[in-house]
Amino acid sequence: MDIKSLQAASLSMNNTRNFHEPVNKNNQVSDSSESIIFSNNHSGEEIEVLGRLYDVQAITEGELAELSKRLKDIGAISSDTYAVMSFPRRKSRAAEGADIDVNGKFDFLATSMKTLEYLKSSSAPQYTLNIQKEIVDILSLMNRMN
Image (cartoon, rainbow, N blue to C red; front, side, top):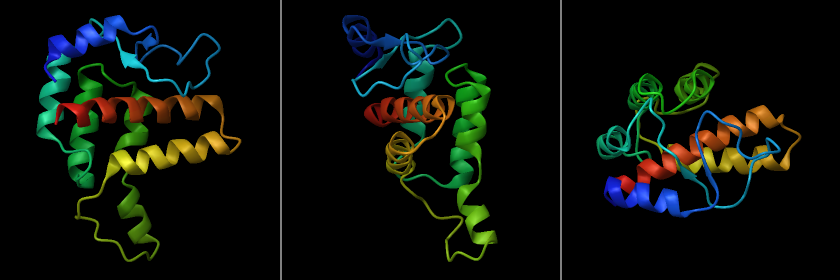
């Protein structure tokens, strides 16, 4: 999907949001399909380029750290979301004794979606849900561009 089509689709949907705003008026995570309004801090072209550079369904932790920083630097994600995205999960699990290839690729989009579903079913704070939803939204967008 090219960026003009993406922006047109974004404008045509009723449920649009900026990543730096609450998920909805009640600050609740919505299950409906939402799209991104591109802010002045970044352009869709920058996200499209990143979507082509990084495969969020087959990414190493090092690549994920780079991607997270680049998304934060262009204003596509908040600093809190950056902190969650760039946390070295696999390395920390390996340090605890888990048998994990810390340099191997993994499906961060699927992992993030599962985490969001778990958080929705638990008593996680709304702020935590919002951060995880932001991660899933940006990864889903990038995956569609890949």
